[in-house]
Amino acid sequence: MVYRTARCGLRVTRGQRDRVFGLLRSAGDVWCCVLELNGWRRRRQAAPLAGYQELCRELAVSGPGTFGELGSAGARSVLRRYSDAWFAAAMRRKGGDGSVRYPRRRRGLVPVRWYAGRFALQGRVLKIPVAKGCPALLVRLDRDLPYPPGQVRSVTLGFDAGRLYLDVTAEVPVAAYPPGRGPDPGRAAGVDLGIIHPYAVAGPDGRGLLVSGRAIRAECRQHLRDGKGRSRAAARRAPRPGQRGSRRWRQHRRRVRATQARHLRRVRQAQHEAARALISWAVEHRIGTLTVGDPRGVLAGKAGRRHNQRVRDWRIGHLIRALADKAETAGITITLVDERGTSSTCPKCSRRVPKPAGRVFSCPHCGQGGHRDLVAAASIAARTGGGIIPAIPSGAGITHRRAGTHLPGVHPARRDPRRGPPSRPAAPGHLAGTGPPPTPPGTRGVARPKARNTQAPDNPSKTYE
Picture: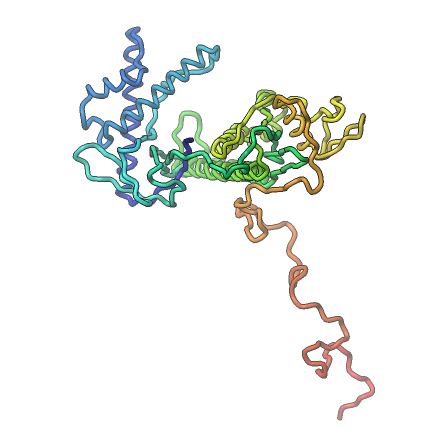
C-alpha cells in the first residue's frame, strides 16, 4: 500500500466560505498561541514545549469553545504540524545547517487536517467536523475524486493564492500484473533529467524514450515575460518603504499571486504527465529498475542570471518526486546516482569529449554518435551496479512523447491569451491549403462554362448603335 494525495477545489456559498475561513483563522490562532507560550517560556529560560503530547495537554487545559468552531481534532492537527516543523528544524541544526530557524513566524491562516472517522465523504459532498454545538458544515468539491471513498484516510483544508482547496490523501494498493508481464527487477534503464527533455530514458534492447518539455519551457518564458510587463506597468503605484499601499496596489499583488499559483499548477500538471508517460513506457517494456541521474549538485553554482532563471524554472525536485511516487505505485524501484560527466563521456571508449552544443553527441576519438540525452541516460544506466552500458537507442527504437499538451498556445486552435497580436498582418484571402483553387486570369469558371468572361476586354471591331 502507498499513500497518494489529490487536490480539489471547493464550490461554496458566501456563508460556507465565511465559516471555512473561520476554521482557518481559528487554526492560525492555535498556531499563534503556541508561539506565545514558547516565547513566554523562552524569556523565563525554560525548555520549549515541542512534543505533540505536551501540546495536547496544554490544549486540553484551555477547554472547549476556545477557538470558535474549530474542534479538538482540527486543533490537534495544527499542534502536530508545529511539532513536526520544530523537530525537523532541530534535526537540521544538529546536522550542521546553521541557517535553519525554528517556527516562530505568526500565521493568519493555517491548514487544518482531519483523519478518517472524523469527516463524512459522499460523492462530491464533504461534511467537515466542527466544534460541539455548532451546525453541520457541508461543502461541495469541484470534481470527482480519483480514489474510492473507502480508501480516503485524511483531508486537509487550506487556502492558497485566493483559492480554497482540499487535499485528499488515500491509501492506494500497488499495481498487480499477470504472471510474466510485470516489471522485472533485472531489467534496468537509465534516466537523464533535463530542461528541454524532462526525461530521457535508455533501456535494454536498444529502446529509448524522449519526453519533450518544450511546451513547459515556453510556458515558463511567457510567464516571465508577462510578469515583467505587469511589474513595469504597476511600478508607479508601488508604495514607499513603510507604507501600506493603495487598494489598486493590493489588488495588483493579489493578481500577481494568483497568476503565479496558476503558472505553478500548469507546470506541475505537465511534469506529472511526463512522469506518467515514462512509467507507462517502463511498464510496457517490463523495466523494474530506473537509475535516475541526480543533478541537484549543480543548483548551488552561479552561472549567470539567465541560466539561474532556467534552473529555477526547472523544478528538479518535483520531477524526481513525481517520478518516484508513480514508480512506487507501479512496483518499480528508483535509484538516484550522481550524473556528473555523463553528457561529456563517450559510452564506447570511455574518453572525455567536449560537451556538444546541440542535441547530437559525436565522439571525435571512436566516432560514436547519438542523441546527447540518450547517451547520458545510457551512461547513467551503467551506474546501477552492473557496469554494462546498454546500446544507444536510435531510429525506430526511440519513442517520442510530449508533456504539457493542456498548456495554452500548444495547439494552433488554442492561442495563448497572454501573447499579443502578431506583428505581421495575416495574408488576405484564404489560409494556405484551404479554400477553392484560384481561377487563372483569362479563363472561365467551371460552374458556368458558357458564361460571359467579364475579365476579357471588349471586341474593338464590334460597334454599337
